[in-house]
Length: 532
Image (cartoon, rainbow, N blue to C red; front, side, top):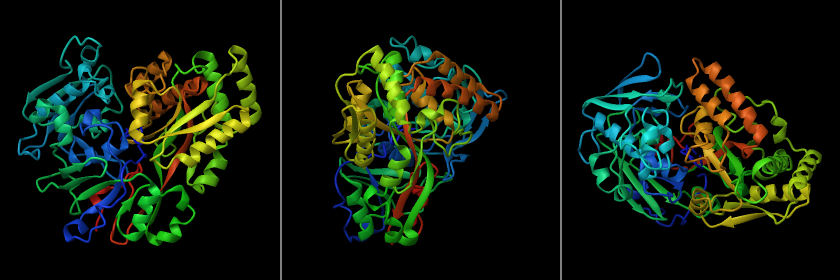
C-alpha cells in the first residue's frame, strides 16, 4: 500500500512534488537512453518498512527483490523464493534461491529477511509499515509500547537459505503479500545507520541506486547481477519531481519526459487526440477518500457518524466525475476499489454513497440536535498533486447542499499533509487515497481500518470489524473471505469510517521516444518493461 500511494497506495501518493524537468531535457546521449518518468519527493528515506506512500514506493520496489513479485496484472510470481511450503497456511517453511547478491556484493541469506522483518516490527524503530507483521507470532511482544522482546518468536533462521514463519492463525493473504515492500530483505550494512542507508540504499532488485538529488530527481541504473524474473529492459530510470502535472504533461508532449502516469485535469478531454496511440487508459486499483480524525470538533461519536454520512450524501460524485474527469473515475461504492477480486458494489447501506440532498440535510439536522454546528468544514489537500479541482468541487457540493461554510485548503506538498496526518495535528478533513500493493481487498482494508494499524489515519476503531478482518484472513476459501469482508464493510458503512469519493480509471501517456510502456494493475507503470 501505500498512500497515493499507500504503495499503497494507503496512500496513499498520486501527489507529485517538487521541481519541473529542467535537468532531463538534455540531448546528452547518456541521458537520452534513460527512461524519464514523473515522480515526487519521497516522504522518508528509502527504507522498505518505513515507506508507505507512492513516491517512495515506486523507487523502493525497483531497488529490492522480495520472495515474490507482482506482474503487470497483479499476479504474484516467485522471485527470491525457491519454495514456500505450508500445510495449513499458518506454519511456513521458506527456502530462498542460492547465490543472490545485494549490490554491495554481500549474499542475501535467510537472516537478511528475518533481520529486516524484525527491524520493521520493533516498536522502538517506529516503522510506518510495522502493521504488516501483525499476523506473526511474537509481534505483540516486540510492537508493544515497551517491547517485551527484540525479535518475533514466530521467525526462525534454519540455515543460510531457509527460515520458518509461524502465524497466529491461518492467513489467506500471507503468501500473496510476500512481494510487498515491508517483506524485502536488508543487507547487514543497513542496520549500522538506517537513516543513512535510506539516503543511499543497497538493494537486490532489478535496479541499483545511483543518486538522489532531493526535490529534483532520483536516478537508478540496471542491476547487471539481478537473476530474477523482472530484469530491466531499459538503460535506467530517472524519477523526475514536478510541482504540477501540467508542467509534466507539457514535457511529455515536448519529448522531455518519457512516461506520465497522471494526465492533468486540464487535458483529460484532449489527451487521446494529443497523444494518439501513446495515450493510455485503464481501470486501476486506486481510490480517493475524504478522511477526518475523530478528535476534530463535531466528528467524534454518534454526531461524527451522522455528519460523515451527511457529507457523503451531499457530494454529487457523478457530476464531479463527468465535469472534472471527463468520466475517467468511478463513484465509490465501498472502501476498497472496484477492480479488486470479490468487490461488491451493492453492500447494505451503500446508498450512503449516493447523492441525496434531502437525506443529507436530515442527517445534518440530527447531528445538530446532538451539538449545534459551528465553524467551517475544511478539506486540506496537497496542491502539488493535481487535486485542486475535485476537492473544490466536493467542498462546493457540501456547501450548497448543507448550507455550511465548506472550503478547500491547499498546502504545498504531499509530505506536508502526510506529516500532519501521521502526527494527528492536521485538525481538518483531508484528502487521501490508496493504491494497491497487491490485489486483494484485505490489503486495502487491513492497512487503513484495523484499529491498531499505523496507517489507520481516521482513528477508526471497531472491535467487530477487527474480528471480521481476522476471520476473513483465516477463511478457508476466497469466497468465504469475500463474504466476511462484505460483513465488515457493511459495519464500516454504518459507522461511515471515512468518506470514499471515487475509484480510478487511470489516464496516462508515453512520449514518442518510447516504444513500449504499460500501466500495471495499480496505476503505476510496469517500469522494468518500459522500452525506449
